[in-house]
Each structure stands twice: as structure tokens, then as C-alpha cells.
Image (cartoon, rainbow, N blue to C red; front, side):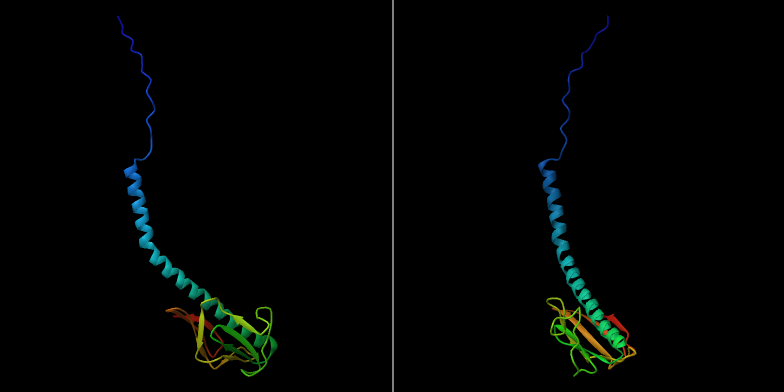
Amino acid sequence: MKTIHLAREQKPAQGGFSLAEMTVLLAVIGSLCVLSLPIFLSYYQSAQVRSAASDVAGFVNQGRQLAIQRNQSVCVSIGSTAVQYRLGSCGGTVWTGAITTSAGNVNTPAGITLATTANPVFSNLGAATPAATITVSQGTRTLSVVVASSGRVSLGP
């Protein structure tokens, strides 16, 4: 005689994580966040200074293009928080255009300060006299924008 066994209904196994496993996971994620925050903040501040230096290099190149376009000398006057274009010489009339305020200023981003060794004057051929180094700063972070006598504008350390 054969015996027939009736299969009992089995409840499906409950999946998931235990409270201890979730606590360990959250502790690991929290530790990684705490350890990576200073690195992220340092990168963010460096990126802000690099972006502002690129903007300033663009402003200086705009002055060079203005000199070539108008076929006259243009002085790029560097203030602590703004750039101005002066026609003829550094004492000439202030140029106003689409990128300037009504006073002729091209403002730098908030928190950025500028310092320069000289205000470059671009000739109608694009050469700069004198060559200059513009220091872009935010707090302790600095980056230089170098204007060569040939008129080339580049970013440096």
C-alpha cells in the first residue's frame, strides 16, 4: 500500500533587512559623507575661482577684440571688483556696451577680487603694452590671468 503525503502549505519567506543591517548601512553611508565633505568643499571653491578667472580672461580678450574692431587702442582697466574698457588710453572715455553696466563696468562674480600688475593697453593690431598679470582671488584661493605683450591671454597657477 502506498502512502500519500499531503503537502502542507508553506508561507512565503519574508525578505528584507534586519534593523541591525540597516543601522550598519546608514553608519557606513554617514561616515562616507562626513569624510568626503571637506574634499567637495575644497573642489567647489577651486572651481569658483577657476570659473571667475576664465570670465576675467574673456573680459580681457573682449578688450583686445574691441581694439581690433575699432582700429584704436583700448585700455582694459582692472579694478578690485570690475573691469572697464577705456578708448584711446587708460585716461580715455569709458566704453559701454551689451556686457557693461551703464557706468561701463563689467562686474566680477560675488566674492571675487582682482589685483593687477598693470592695466594692459591693446593696440589696433591686438598687441598689449604693458604685459600684465591679473590675480583672481576668493579667500585664500588665487589664480592668475596672464596677458603677454603679444596680446595672448592665458590662465596660470
